[in-house]
Image (cartoon, rainbow, N blue to C red; front, side):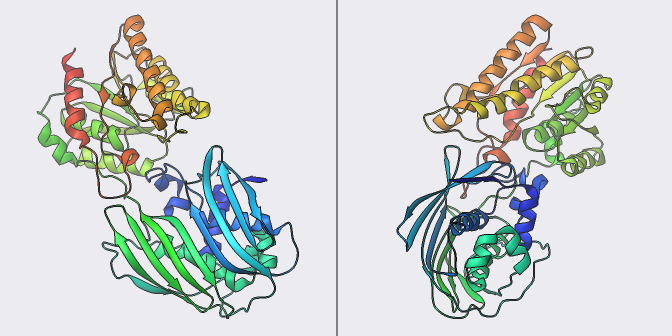
Length: 463
């Protein structure tokens, strides 16, 4: 069994090798608003790394005859992954890539010793490019030329680059470029590939969409070249969720409804925090919203609010580092209302089990982060709004760590009210439409604005 951890630098290098510069893989700020909450390792990167580790145990040139890979779960950058050989009879091999309790990829292939014919392969790396965004996927088709930088391939995949014909390697690499850059393109998640290889010189790959099912977000593509034929399956992932415009928030809120508040919205650059900031500002509050990594999102939001006459400012703040200069700067602003929307990515845990590291990750933000923020703002703070979740009472098994951490945050809120004399609210919100709840397919959750506005009004009316 071999083990490694992919880094952001590894991702950028693989993007140059493959041509797949999808932001899901190489842009940590944009990726935080996508399905997995952070950059995910290219599925084909995991696949080729596993093949490379298998190839390290042998010598001499090899030829692939068939290759099937299923990418079962995303592998986030900076998370360890292990590869194990589950079957190897000298011709058919099964590899398994895992991370903790999660199966990341299942890989089956057939091979033999020997030289494959090369072909038309441009010897170069790829420059950064933007993936295509499609309005519809029916009847899409195209052609993928092959390219391979030998030196970069040898650095990233030394054993595979030495033993596997460059035409076969370049053809496999081209498929991640197809999914990540062409179809589905921008909104893509690679799910599966199933290929057969022929004894012929490698050349361009022709592809076309065989099936597009928006109900489940599924795209099936046929791929064919002189050297390979088969099928690629990908999912059309949801785009980042946009929230209501400030003008829409102003139409929901009475003028001056929240006037007099010096409101600090922690985690206010997107999602529920963004909605809260807009509603409060539309109601006359003086809003200070914070961001951890999304400065551009925060600035765009502040520009939208201020352009319409709202009072708003922004500041950086990491709830995991409250003693920083940024934290002291927040305290100096003397806010009297804290609206706490900080959250990590809401990852699922093992079904029927319990992940202590995941629970501790949630608690670091929902419990310790809130406690530290309340202590930091103690001289001026009068009230705290920290939304909880209905999942505390009735949530799926795979969210027990999240629900338990939210329950602990509720206990903290009760303690702040009891011992600090603060007005504290922790309404249990239903599942709402945000980046965190976006799922494959056409279904969407409830609009956050009306639900959140009702909770904010109740909080404000309490004094």
